[in-house]
Length: 439
Image 1 (cartoon, rainbow, N blue to C red):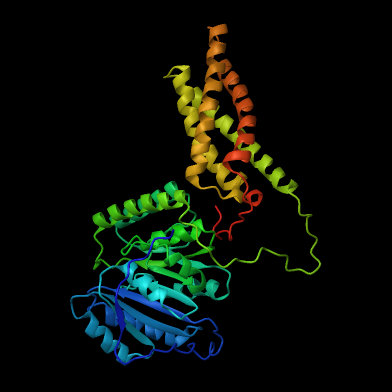
Image 2 (image 1 turned 180 degrees about the vertical axis):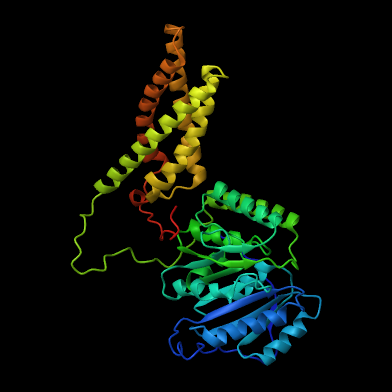
């Protein structure tokens, strides 16, 4: 059963029904079809809000090619932010104000996005740290239907950032933890610059629970887990040091959120019903297509597995040879096998058996059981060789280890393919789609 989102009360600015503004600029007039609602969540931002809204409004009016609306989501500000927001809404056409009774960026976005009548919803931080040149590239792939969710990334190739080393370090560590623990492909979960098609966003919002800063990560983890296509836009980003973020408490909450999401995925509660994207089809009317058999998939799997296996065997042999100078055979084999098994499993998950889209936890747990078998067989082979020929050199030991590893590899392929990375096509649960940022 999907968890029920926290409820909250919110009101629009009195007496206003804010329509979407027409596409901006003569070159784009009438070209937009998808409507876009841009949400600016704020909490005690009376100083920053005027500059944000006037700058954003001018940019949209001058050249944004889609019908648009700006909504200020005031999540329980205690200063003059509500008054400032209503005054700006009266001044600037196409600006609406929503007042919530509780604090939380995630709560504000869930509340406004969940009730939006736009085709596409987006949000950006009030400090406009992310350059607005990235707004159209963010929205365009959603308007065409090519992607489901789009995110600005400060860590993608081509991104340019101006920020202090402390924040850079925390950001890279956090996103590294997400990739390590959840095996995701997106690079930056917390950049305050995101958009989504409301058609697919609604089912995801019903599962989200976080009211604060982890909401972004939670939404992206759910999106990728359910096979949605996530598009990344490298952005220009300049740090505004006047921030409301408590780094320590936010980091703690984020780690708790990652653990909660891991349990949600493991229980199956993170799966939601989504509109199904059509399967890929050839555009050319005279395209010559391969017959629909599984032979090509098996050839790919065998070829990749052999290549990865060869690299892993060589890598383990070299690492064993290096460690053997300090440690006994069993210890050197254990460490070298453990390291190369983790690397081998991740390579096979991302390349060899990528069609299965097996979760990282299941992949590494299954590979861990095979690791025990491989360790027992290879260690037994090396110890048996040492017993029969006590004077054998480390090079000879390494050769025996490599031969035993080849035998273990053949068994490992069969077990990985049939059990750990069982094909989704075989079980009839074909994923919704794949992400555009394949690794």
